[in-house]
Image (cartoon, rainbow, N blue to C red; front, side, top):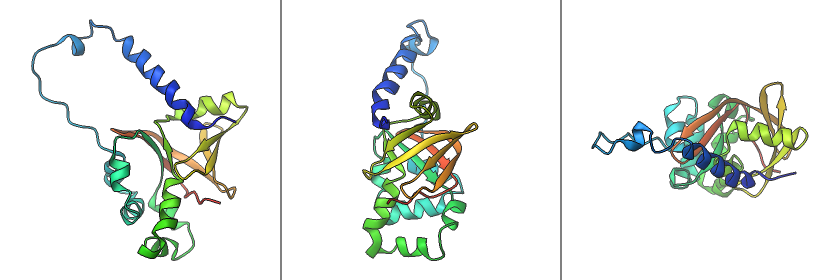
Length: 188
């Protein structure tokens, strides 16, 4: 099975090819007059903070001191569990994980939700289809996830065999992409 970070080169080449097809006649590229600056796109952390359904994730990212990392240049792909997903964990799990004494464990869990490079849902589907129905994804934690399709839904399975659906894909950020999930991945 192929590991997702290999997609980074493919995605980059596809993006460069798309940019090349714009040509120099594009009004946006041909206009040399001063114009108002474009507002900067939010980072992955900004996206999570703005949804209203990722408060637990944001709290955990802050407790693990990962705000600067996930606000950095990346690019990253983050599978972002909702508050409802975190609520499915046994009572007291989140409260225990965000305690300073559990920072290493929390960091391991959060980096298990992140992949180096920008991997769109289209990239995931292509990889799944190319590899006969499932694809292995290497996460920043060094552990792997398995992606497959269930109908039109991308399903991610963690090391313990827990399946989580991507409920909202391709939320763009300045430093990557966010895929919202209905479950939390727990490393093996």
